[in-house]
Amino acid sequence: DQQVKQNSPSLSVQEGRISILNCDYTNSMFDYFLWYKKYPAEGPTFLISISSIKDKNEDGRFTVFLNKSAKHLSLHIVPSQPGDSAVYFCAADRDDKIIFGKGTRLHILP
Amino acid sequence: DAGITQSPRHKVTETGTPVTLRCHQTENHRYMYWYRQDPGHGLRLIHYSYGVKDTDKGEVSDGYSVSRSKTEDFLLTLESATSSQTSVYFCAISVTGTNTGELFFGEGSRLTVL
Image (cartoon, rainbow over all chains, first blue to last red; front, top):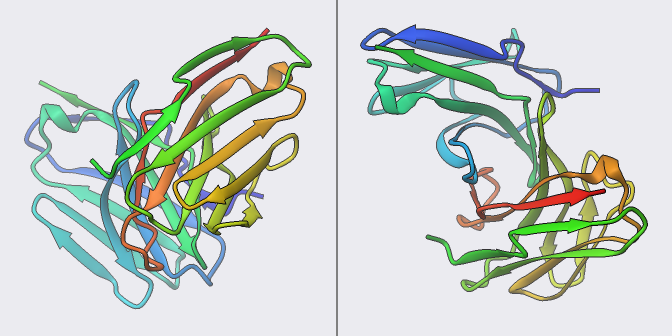
C-alpha cells in the first residue's frame, strides 16, 4: 500500500515558466512533508520541507503548498531553469520513518 | 558534505552469496537509513536505525538485515542475494537530529546480482 504517491512520472516545462509537481498521501499522521531532488548517479538532495501544521513554505524559487483536507501537496518552481531538470521525490515523515514517492522526472525545455 | 561514505560503490555478485554494504559517517548523527532505488519504484525504505543496536524495519525489509554496533557504522546485509535485490542502495543520515525528515544521502552503492 503506497502511502506517498506521485502520479505523474514525468513533466516537461518551458524554461522561465512555472513547474508544478504534485504529491498525494494517505496517512494523516505524517508530521513533515519534504521534496528532494536527484540527478543521475548522485544521491538525492533535500530541497524544501513543510510542517503538517502549516500550509505554505517558501524558499527562493521554491514553494511548497500543503492541503491537508485533500491530503495533497505541491512544489512550485518559479521561474524554471535548465538546472532544475532532475527527478523530484516527495517524502513524508512520521516518527523518523521517512517514506518516499516514486518520483517525477522534470524536463526543462529551452 | 555531512561526512557520509558508502562502500563498496559497485559490486557484482552471484545469486546465493552473502553481501554486506557499509555506511560510515564521521559526525555521530543518531539516525541512519538504508533505501533502495529501482525504476518505477522510487526510493523504498529498507531499514533504519535510531541509535546503537536500535533498528527498525522499513517498507521492504524482507531478505535484508542490519546492524549498528557503533554510532558511525550502519551495515546492510543480504544473507543470500537474489536477482530481485539488484538495485542502487542509498544510505542516509538525519543531520538535524530532530523529527523533520531532512536527510543527507550518500552517493549510493550499485549492486548487481547475477
